[in-house]
Image (tube, rainbow, N blue to C red; front, side, top):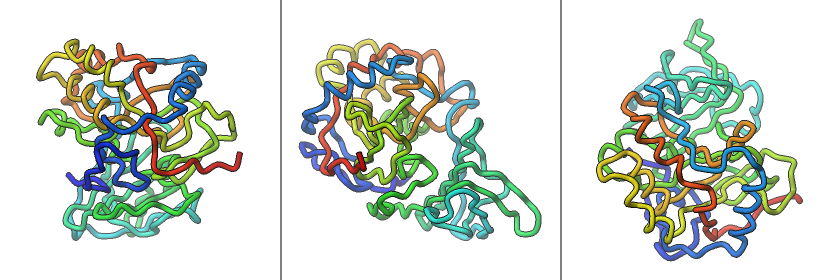
Length: 299
């Protein structure tokens, strides 16, 4: 399946300032000069301080997504909260599109053949004539493009990023290779963003809090010294390797104490006992990767 950016980044360069960042191997990228300050700032938040796979549970946890064909009928979506920062009022959302459990109620629809991604936040199926939906915000992404959203715009995620490219998916793990950064949430974030993120969702100006779009990965030493703890052929080993090669991108605010929560697509194929091995990886094992873009903040 395509991601918003299928272009490989320069191996030794900083994290890209457009959607190609998702597929950029950052294992050899330079480390941000404030890496230690960021990690200490996250540690001071308390709460969870180790990697937490926020998916599994026989498909109960994680964010689902729906695939449709190129000729799926377009229906009306009424945007209820952020119409000025939303992309569509009509979209190929089927009436049975899967809705994320919990308060965020994300709906993600991948349109094959046209390579378009439609995402909604706070989505509810209304029905009636035309099979209508309501959503707090909507976003459309062309999967052939690395184009960013407008600066200051949200999406279906707080950071203004697409959600699907950052989800760990069962199929790719089964095939043994995750080639993209992983969507991650923290309990508190800074009133700032770094491209490819385009939006912040905080009133906190502390410089050591993670801005939206902050890119991190496992340190080389931690990865090499601990890879043996994840058995060959296990789901956790594939994800552990991705956390080193492609890392994570801060994309949303989590619940109280919910730091280092990595997001995956819901699937009955996840093995919780295996995924739980990742919970032994501390946040202090990560380093912050230097970005091409500077921080955008009013602080």
